[in-house]
Image (cartoon, rainbow, N blue to C red; front, side, top):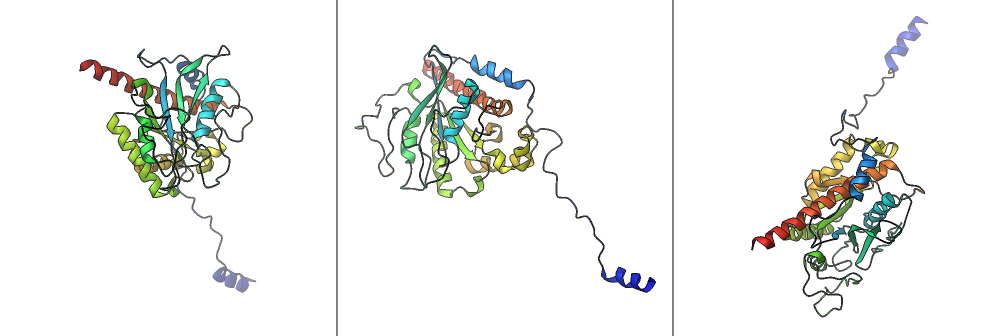
Length: 305
């Protein structure tokens, strides 16, 4: 028996527990969020928000990004947070059929009460960016930034809008312009986005910068990008994966990380969720502040002339 054990010990490799990989989350949140209190505080803050200048009583926010990134779903999620229920005001596509589900330039408002009043902001949703010759033309998005395109315009992938088009506005004022440009990128597939699409988004961002329009990124589908966050959404600001994805978005478009907001859009849920709402409302609060700053800067510049 002793000889047998000696032979066995020579040829049988003992089981050793493999070393664990690097930790998937930081010890402390790298962006503080009070999950127990911020929900009601954010809802109150955004509900009471009013533009600082009477010349522009409604702030205009443009959503743009690749097809299937979650632009329409982000607006629906904003609407859900205020209505306290699931809504589908902006039609979102659940599958990728090779083209954007949003074909027209559509503007959406969020209802404030049953009397029919609305919050002082609106979202403009446009067709998703495709490869050249398939989706919305970059020149049309730039015209939209300047306030030249009215709601309801159907984009032509081979011909940009002209001054003769009935949906073209010749002399837009400050209230007609876009006041904040919001790029929507999916966290789970941001690495796979076609470089031509990224190039088009960079061109739009550069023009927005030249016009002084603030830009932010809404990073969607965080639950599909990180198992830790899928199990517990409150781990979003300790997740190293989410932080990495935000940095990747920053590099691709040149938007600083502090202007990138990771969110989970409502998709499969049948009821609203406080944690989902907190992330949505936090992003919206900052978007409104940036848009309001832009309007006030433009008015100050005009008055200085």
